[in-house]
Image: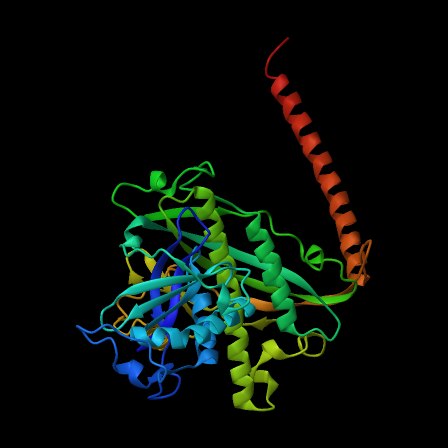
Length: 449
């Protein structure tokens, strides 16, 4: 008996497809996420037609299934998402489980872990007979469930992966208020997500396919991988990142690093769909890395008690950060599942062996890949230099930001420096003109008129 998540794309491309099934792990040690008692657990034996039994009792750990979905969702490539649930149990128990499964689907939708129509796949044990139902996006109860066609086919053979390497350089101004550094980092990530939405993605050096071009036409023969290149708009200055905020700015949050992106799309999907999926993945990846950084800070604070020096990301920026604060950007590990489908995990640390152990634990307990080995794990960002980035950069002098711009002692100093540079620049131009004139006169004297 088993309950788990359906991974795929429903209503996003040319075809609805389920590409993977991830079982929900045990709720507690030795306790399954689904328990079936009564005669239903013994029904469906080979040679006998299963019959619904009023004595069948099904108990599904709904909160645990939703928690599992929240852990899986950030680890999926762009283009696929949590698309529904599946149950593997005797057919006679399906009816008893239907109400609970539907409530879980509605809970996933409330938690924003599931969008659009949802699929509920019922697999009979041991006959493996499949039946599928669909819960419309507008549904609010199990009464809206309706039957839908379900065909089994090797769908991953019809998919391709799109990958890229993106250079992250984002910054955002922090005001001298009670705002904590995590708030500034969240605003920085949000600003970068907006920038990604306006980015252009091309193939190779400068090939820009038409948005309606099928992905299959862009893949090389015998290959199901497309390597794309990100062209992002110029980074805005930190004052502009502050948006409509006014007050005293005393520093900025910074995020830098090499960010790998990966999406999974059907080969019949358009290039425009692939671009949207890749941008979705990069945005999801930024959020996942930030969550890892903050979670590790919270764990460090819980371990050290009142010693705030161990958890700098949780402190108030206006009272503590007089010096730059550094924090490693979590790396992305790609975990091969099947064909072009690869899940992800995000972790930070200095010891590579420790990172490998963490990734393999995630693969086994969260993603249902117990046989994955460390040799199969891909680290796409390890080849790129990953400096220890400064996440907090204080100003030497506070700046007053108003609706008309920035005014402060530092601004005045900057203006005087600009004026001095203009004077020096004008002098340099004048000297250059004299030098050019002298050279022309000298060259002219070599030739008689």
